Amino acid sequence: MSDSGHPAPVFGIAGWKNSGKTTMTERLVAAITARGFRVATVKHAHHAFDIDQEGTDSHRHRTAGAVETALVSGRRWALMHELREEAEPSLAEILARLSPCDLVLVEGYKREPLPKLELRRTAAARGEPLSPGDPHVVAIASDGTVADTALPVYHLDDIDGIADFILSTCGLSGNRYGADQTTA
Image 1 (cartoon, helix red, strand yellow):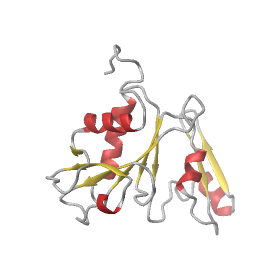
Image 2 (cartoon, helix red, strand yellow; image 1 turned 45 degrees about the vertical axis):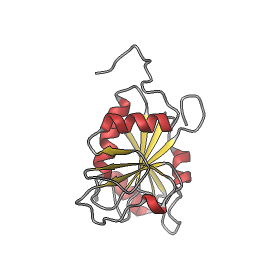
Image 3 (cartoon, one colour; image 1 turned 135 degrees about the vertical axis):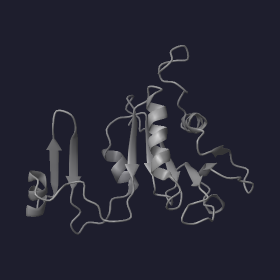
C-alpha cells in the first residue's frame, strides 16, 4: 500500500541465473529511494533458506514448533513464518503483508503477470530471451546489443534511465520531493 492507502505499484526484475537481478534491484532501490520514494522489495528464492542462526533464541523458538517468530530490536524487526506443511504463499499473499510504501520491486517471480524489466547479461546461465514468451516484459536491460525487440532497451549501467522508466510505468513522478528540490 502506498501512503494514501492504495496498493503500491509492483514492478519486477527478471532474468536467468547470473543475469544480475540482485545487483540491479539493489541499485534501483538506492536510486529510487534517493528520489524520496519508499521502496519495498520481495525476493523469490528457489531453494531453502534460513535468515536465523542455529542456537539463537528465535531459532530455538522456531525449532520448538512456533509457527511465527518475531524478532524485534530498536533498529529493525523481522517476522519469520514457518510453512511446515503449508504451500508456498503466492506473490499476492506476500504483497498483502507488506507495510505501506510507494513502490514494490520484485526480484525473481519471472512467470508472474506483472510489468517487469528483463535482464540480459552475456555471462548469464542461459541465453534465450524471456520477452518473446512473456507479454509482461516491458523493457530490457543488457550489457550487449539487443536487436530482436521493439521494447525499450537500456544498458545495465543506466540506472537513472531505468529508474525513470519504472517510475513512469508505475505512474509515479520522477522525484517525490518535487521538481525543484534535488537529492544528494
